[in-house]
Length: 397
Ligand code: AMP
Image (tube, rainbow, N blue to C red; front, side, top):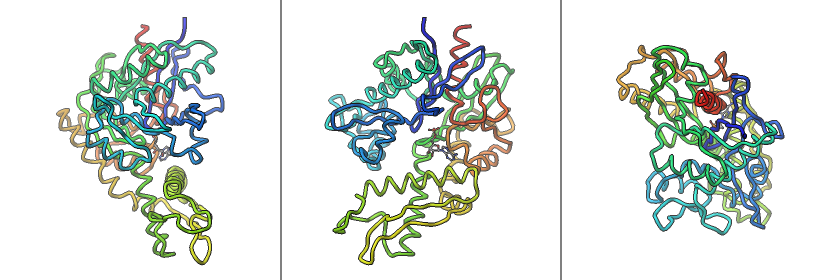
């Protein structure tokens, strides 16, 4: 008959869950990963690699690897938001004949729907391998701020991937379902979703199993990527102060093999992200990139320690930006913090202690990040997929 799964197709990573014996569980890949990178790449023979396979080729096949496609779905190339993204991305965003934002990659113009379909088809494969069963239907979570065109784009991508879309579910509602809040009475919940690309703050009202998103406010350029770039900025500033070399302007003109600037930028960003993730559980991280650049006197190495305080200092301006969408969402939902019953944090960045502290300060109450909840198992980047799986169960009664 085929199974129904819950899917969180994320900007940076995706996650799939299923309901087993009335309990939502995350499905892992063959290699044991509970989340899947939202990456698609094409090799020289035109073969497509998705997820972990694509990430493995990331540095060698950087120019033909697409990330962040969720941010383009259903948008026009002339959209200022798209143009801002295009300035930061290594691949060209081009206008299709109807003005839609497409990507020029690996020698072809491709629609975000087609690229998202590759992600979804891979998700379907992972789920079928895990379940040893066919997967035909999905509940897919989307940002509450998605408009009809963006929702249609996801629907089309599901169809291309061979998935029947059972329902599109707003991500904050999915989060509330994962926490089991739908079984409670007259609950107002703030859901702060900070992933790789964007911040969405939603106020959700739950009443006897029914839910309504009262308001959503976003900061479309506040996500993990922005934090990574801030850390790179600090590393580059300090390197400049120490060695007089600006890592942001390395031209690769040295006769010895030096990394190309784009490659170097990506290496730096990956290094910054690793340190950021490490500093969510440790108070000190090592940042090491040997032979980062060649100068007349020989190769230079980036080698330093970074503590949590330095990380938070580098990201202060970004942390300060959390407050405004939270307050705007409260105003739009005609709520005050004291009207809220819960504050839920979701998205990979919810693991950063400074994010948890800021959110608690803005809403004036403790925040929940997944631990001790119904289905969540303590992982904020799995909550939305788990909620989508719970919703698939509700749909089946
Ligand atoms: P998502 O799209 O929800 O999977 O979130 C992805 C973002 O979360 C990326 O920017 C990751 O670097 C970030 N992230 C993942 N794990 C952690 C962690 N432990 N601490 C801080 N950020 C994290």
